[in-house]
Image (cartoon, rainbow, N blue to C red; front, top):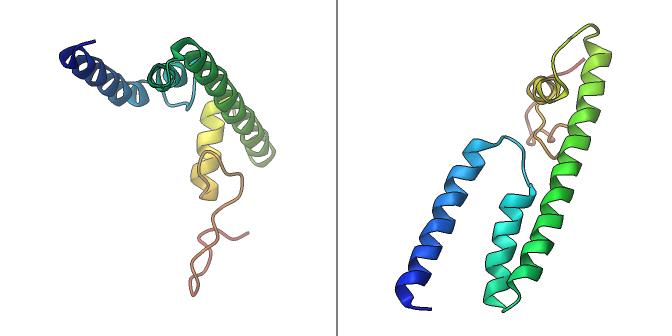
Length: 120
């Protein structure tokens, strides 16, 4: 493989990685993680194995993200009965109201000397 083709491959992967996060709001997925695993596997001379491992990891990460979003949507439904939005929108509203981020169920502790942002 010539240095020009390696450079073009790296540029393509970099370009895809810059576009992919903007296209989807959810983390993970077989395509994103599979591509990264395939490149990593290629460097270790196990491209297919790396792609399969990356795909499996991406599917697991997305499953965990969606499971947490469903939990947050259920908590949102307890606080706001009758809301007809999708579970993803409810999870985003829960994050905004409770100062949490995707990937954490509880609000981050306030820095020392500051009162919490939301108290009940």
